[in-house]
Amino acid sequence: MVNYNGNLVGNDSSFLNHENRGLRYGDALFETLRVKQSGILFWEDHYFRLMASMRMLRMEIPMDFTLEYLNEQIKQTLQANSLSNSAARVRLTVFRNNGGRYLPQTNEVSFIIETEALDSEEYTLNQRPYEIELYKDYFLAPGLLSGLKTANKAINVLGSIYAKENGYQNCLLLNVNKEVVEALHGNLFLVQGQKIKTPPLSSGCLNGVMRKQLIELLKADDTYQLEEGTISPFDLQKADELFITNVIAGVQPVSKYRKAQYKSIMATELIHRLNKNLEKLSSD
Image (tube, rainbow, N blue to C red; front, side, top):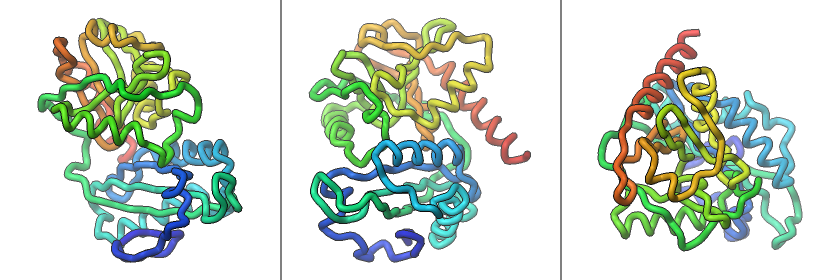
């Protein structure tokens, strides 16, 4: 079952048409959420990022589009798909309603909620070989629009095809200044000694929810020096460790980039801390 504007409809239902602005122009935003026992992890961060993104795209936010309303709609969709007591992945898509060409006839919006089961309620560390490469066919433009989760993800699609064709598990994207920005589906962190570095939002990277959680975790620990700073391709080969973050996988360690091979010490520690914090939140 899929939730379309608060109505539960079958997966095979035709409730969108050729005039959909998400289809025509990528005029849509989405949030990918991880759910544990019907509780949405980091829900407030997702919600406020979505609201800020809608304002930036001049979408009209409905009066009933509250934190509580969308939370309830997500729970109803999970229940309809027998996922209320399971780990699940949820995609919440918001798009501007039909009408107009580049200039929309309205700024009113609709939404879709989709769900699918996940294997584990806790974050687990994937220790399988995970090789990456730079994707250099196209570049991101640094700026706030690049940091939004819009439906216009052509570079991520093409980069994913390139990775599959060449036997890589992921690729890193560069901006027009040839700075490393992020991975195809996650933010990038680099570890060198006691220093941990991640690209700044000004580079064009996604304002990731998991990125925010880990920055807060690391800032609370005096053991490490955290820096939001530019990363060059040359920096990658000097690193002790690289890892990629998103709310579904949590922390994904990179094992190899070209001739460089990496440890996963920090990634292992962060997965442990993350799960511990989530257990504490669940018991509070």
